[in-house]
Length: 189
Image: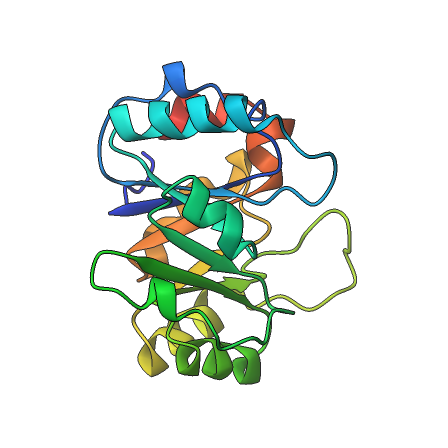
C-alpha cells in the first residue's frame, strides 16, 4: 500500500503536463509551474491558475515574481541557483516560498531566504545521472532532524513509492515522473 502524505509538490514545465481532471479537489497539492522553455499563452495560464483555485490546489510560479503577481499565485518557487533575497512581496502571511536545494549549504541558505519548504534533491538514484550521489532514506531522515520543512525530490518513481513510508517528511515532490509515467497519478490521486 502506498504511503499517503500531507503534501504533494508537483513540478510541471507546461500546463499540458498534467490533467487536473484526474485529481480530486483537496488542499494537499502544491503545483509548481517551472517553465524554462517556450512561454505559455498568458490567457491559457490564467485559466489553468483559476482551475487550480477551483480544485483547491496551491499554485506557484518558479523564479518569476512579476508573473507570480499577475497570476496571484499562492507563492513563489526559488530554484537552487536563485540567490536573490529580495522577495518581500511573498513574505506575507498568506504567501508561501518554496526553495530547492541539493546540498546542506544550499538548504541552509534557502532557510535564510525565508523558504517555508525546501525541496531537497536527490532522494533516490536518478536515471539521467546514475553516477551522481543521492541521499537515500536514512540520510534524508537525518536531514529532517535539522529542519522538518524539507521535502524529498528526485528519483521517486512508481517502483519506489512504497519506500516513502519510511521517509519522515510531511510530503514529497515529483517532477519528471508525472509526464513520463501518467500511471503514477493513478496511485497518487
